[in-house]
Amino acid sequence: LYTRQRRPLYAFSKAYPFGLPNYPLIGQSYIFRGTDEDRMNAFIKMGDVSLKNGGITTVWLGTKPYATISDPELLEVVAKACLDKDTTTMKYLRSVLGNGLIFAPIKIWRPRRKIMAPTFNMKNLQEFVTVFDKQSSIMVQQLRAHAGGGDFSFWEFITAYTFDAICETVLGIELNAQKQRHHLFITAFDVIIQILAKRMLSPWLYWDWVFRLTSNYKPFITQRKIAYDFFDKVIRDRRKELAEQGADEDLKDRKKTFLDMMIVSSGGARGYTDIELREEIMSIVSAGTDTSAVGTAFVALMLSRHPRVQDKVYQELKEVFGDSDRPVTWQDLPKLKYMEAVIKETLRLYPPAPVVVRDVHETVVLPNGATLHPGMGLVLHFWATHRNTKYWGDDVEEFRPERFLEGPLKHPAQFAPFSYSLRNCIGGNYAIMSTKTNLSNLLRRYEVLPPLSVPPDQLLAPFRVKFDVMMKHCDNFELRIRNRHNGLRKK
Ligand code: HEM
Image 1 (cartoon, rainbow, N blue to C red):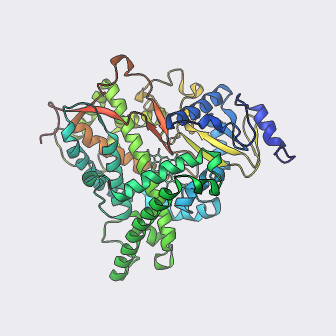
Image 2: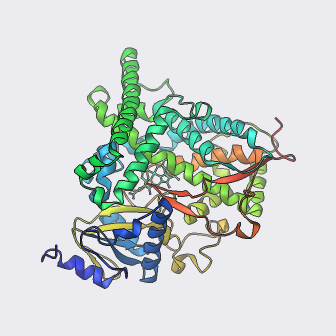
Image 3: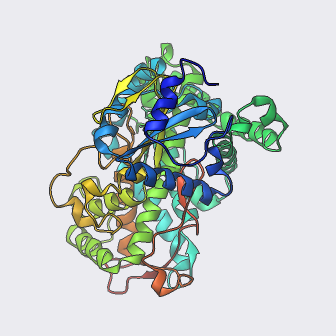
């Protein structure tokens, strides 16, 4: 494997070493052995070494070296120069999402991003706030059984909320995941993600013939079909409805969904095929559900550990809503400035997508003189960038939302939970608006408290986290809630 073309890769790795043995065929991928928590710890270790080495280190996954970046100045350059996702690890996600925006090769990605971008404009997002409000009010109702009770997992409530909100805004259907639980389609999604996460970080499963021999293959195929059938039916029904109305270009009088808008913006009946539509719709659903749920759930955990911060959020809610339990409107959201700082500070410490993996196709010279070469991979390490003391100061591990209210950051790429540059998250504003609406309803009704299972002297310890295709809390986002007796809610 040591050929002349690969010489620069070895030279790079020598200049920015990770410091662990690099074995033939598996490289350093053995650091990802073990549980989901071990996998996240391996990513954290990569980030720590990168920070210690001035924001860059090299980790070998199989026979490919990955430059791991944690300095915003370097991150800014590579995020712009290397737009293609890493084929080695991401092709397995493509085996489900096809050429959907999130993993599409760059040639397909460009025109598709142009079609999707306008559907996320602010006016459309504002209309979705009524859906966020309706669905989060259901969540608040469902939580009643736990008010004043013991520890419970917030995860199942918040994940059902995001599924309901996403399915209504994207597809225009009421999934009712919050009321029904265990929806066939959600189970399918869960199983697919678990299997893909394992495959992506296990080079020995990269060969299809090996994967086919494992016990994961059959459930993967079965669940993928369930997911496809679900989306295909929604798309067929929607097309039919639009055709029956005889005006698939005119959405003026109906409540818009991403599916409708995508049919229109791709060119109506002459635009996206059903498969292309399914790819795009599945991309939004899969990119938008777990990420938002993880983000909001970590905010709730943080508030449960930081009562003074929670008090300030509550005071702000009182200023905006007074004593009313009225629905949240889009006009309320920009007023919740402190809440926004709390959300950002949580995303800084616990970014739901802690890393993004890209490919290097052309030579790129970095501001520190390092040169990336074709054949390398790239890890944009947001977790570590968010802990870079050069930009954040020595209190990086502290939860201090005020840092987002103290004027502009030192570098635009030092805070990148939604990634950076052209291929960043298209749903960042959607996520913040959905989270703010959800928290406004949750926190007007309940106070969130830490779980009794965690000893008081451990409450401010960093959370134990794990990685499937996303970062999550090892203890399933356990907390307690209590009704606010002095509260705003009259019901
Ligand atoms: C807290 C919530 C969220 C986080 C932390 C997050 C984070 C990210 C990240 C890190 C990427 C990868 C960007 C890259 O490769 O550099 C991404 C891409 C994407 N996200 Fe999000 N996301 C969130 C919510 C959402 C929501 C709510 C939606 C849709 C409703 C969404 C839709 C997408 C799509 C479609 C892409 C692919 C964009 C492209 O490749 O052009 N995300 N997101």
